[in-house]
Amino acid sequence: MFRAIWAWIQKFSSPKYFFEMSARLIPWFAIPAALVGAYGLYLGLFVAPTDYQQGESYRIIFIHVPAAWMSLFIYVVMAVSAAIGLIWQIRLADMIAAASAPIGASFTFLALVTGSLWGKPMWGTYWVWDARLTSELILLFLYFGYMALQSAIEDQRTADKASGLLAIVGVVNIPIIHYSVEWWNTLHQGATVAKLDKPSIDISMLIPLLLMALAFKLFYAAVVLVRARNEVLLRDRSRRWVRELIEKL
Image 1 (tube, rainbow, N blue to C red):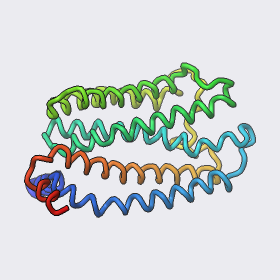
Image 2 (cartoon, rainbow, N blue to C red):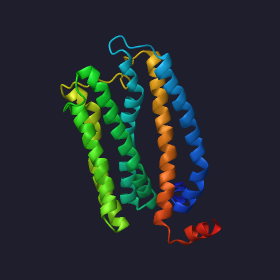
Image 3 (cartoon, rainbow, N blue to C red):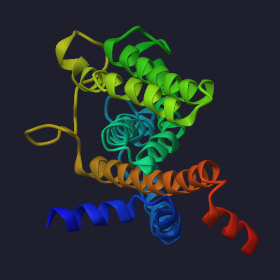
């Protein structure tokens, strides 16, 4: 049983097999991402009622909150992939981590920008050194640090090890971001969806929020596959199967 599972893992983790399989998967993520995202935005911007406290400005939540969720989710994916690459020496895992970093950094930047735009009418300022905001900013620097190590070290295997260690160590920041509003007295509001009891958000606002979260995850899946395919071609450019592929084109 274990041998069969390990054989399947080795087959799936083969860059050549991944490159062929991922081409078929990308449309299955990209098209639903566009459809779900368009519907979620429509519900959030035009159907969801105006908030009785924040007015229309609260609608940025439908971009800000899913982007913030994705910034954490992608970093965990990146760290887990880096750990798999370090422990089991699976090259594809390192490629997934490297492909994920720019996407995660983009979502983190989007979360910070939209959070600042939301904070201005709510707090009277675009930025405060709030625990949640500061730890999210540190997350952006962790993404930048990972990408910097990937670019700065010439030997790819060494670059994967160094950046992978940074990604794994940086995971400690994820629970800090999540629980910062509970551990410290912050301006940032507490959780309204991820709660043990009933979410403290109206269902008409919750549905488009969850749809946008799903759309962002589907979008990430499509984009990371595209970027990972490019990473595979770049790293395996001297291998026979890549040369044969280029010759066919």
